[in-house]
Image (cartoon, rainbow, N blue to C red; front, side, top):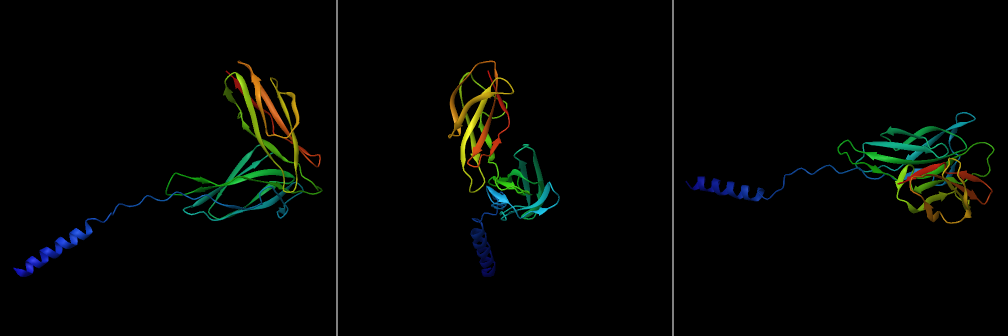
Length: 230
C-alpha cells in the first residue's frame, strides 16, 4: 500500500511540474532585409566583364539576410524605365546590362515559410562604357503626383528626387508643365526638388517632366509624367 501511495504522489508531482509548460509551436520568423554591397551606391561600375561593344556583365552582391530562402534581384534601366528581375538562393548574381547606362536595383528577401517579404534599400549606379569621362546625373524620380494619379482641383505640389554619380554636383532643375504631351518650360534652373502651389483646373490632364543638370554641363530627363484633375 505504501508503494502505491508513493507512485501516485510522484505522478501528481510530475504532472504538476509539466502543467505550466507552453508547448505551443512558435510561428516562423519573417525574412530580414538584405544589405547591398556592390555595385556601390551612386557609383560608376567599371569592374564588369565586357560582353560586347554595348553590353557588359555586372555582378550584384549583398549580405545574407536571416530567415531567407530565395533572393529576388530587381533591376531598373533608368533611361527606359524597364524593369527585370531574377531569383537566386545565393548572395550574388551576374547580369548582362547595357553599357553607358544608369540603373537602380534592390533585393527582395523571400522565405518559404511565410508570405511576408523584406525589401532592401534601392541603389543607383552607372554601368560604364568606352569613351565616357563624365556621366550625366541620374534621371529625376517623380514622387508626386505619381503617374496617372487623379487629384482635386485647386493647386498641386510637384515633387521629385535627384541624384548624381559620386563626386558630381547637381546645379539645377528645369521643370516643364502643361496640358499637352509637349509641355512648355515652366521653371528654369531651380535648386529645390519641388514646385509648390501650381494651379490646376477641373477636367484637365496635365503633363510634366524634370530635366536635371550638373556642373559638367550634362543633363538627364525624368521622362513624361501625367495626372488628371477631377
